[in-house]
Length: 240
Image (cartoon, rainbow, N blue to C red):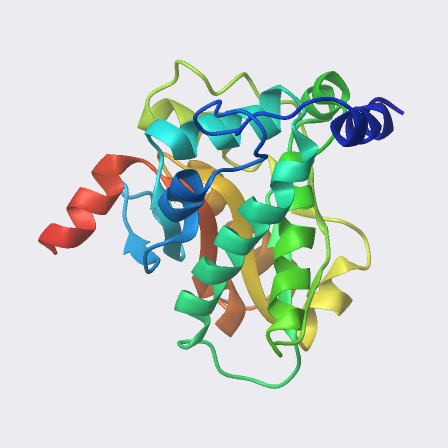
């Protein structure tokens, strides 16, 4: 219900840009350009966790992009999911040229903790993934979202943890829901999330999908896409 009230409020109350606060615009032209106005790039955190898929990001997590993601995730600016979904769709397109196989693209979001979803009133990554799938379909690319990952045990709050601490915190924390492996078997899988910092979440998501398949890395689990990544991950990519 909280999510419904937020969406209704967004229709009747004055709006300001989610990136810079400029009035009378949900997202101004300058902030749109920052979010999805440049070509997505491959990104790599340092250190890079074992098992991390090839990740493409639409933008660096700074300035207006950071403000938009936080407004959507923490302050319930749900209409921003459309712009964020467009950015994520661009990152998916940038990476899926390397994925072969029949069937539509299957976007698998990294799940949020239940307590975080309850506190926010929505699951940000799943909502953005749904918007991205719609954007891809409008562009002629068959795509759908299947939220087959879940947390099998509680994890600590990731904020304040370093890269190795995050990897330890998330190790073995995710699993594919019962029956989910059948949904993944014949599809091209792209793991998706809103943000990449250390890469621990995406590496754990890839491990869980591979474990459910029962045999090594399948084609899709080598690809992932995010809306934004830390600026250092972009810098490392430029230097490679």
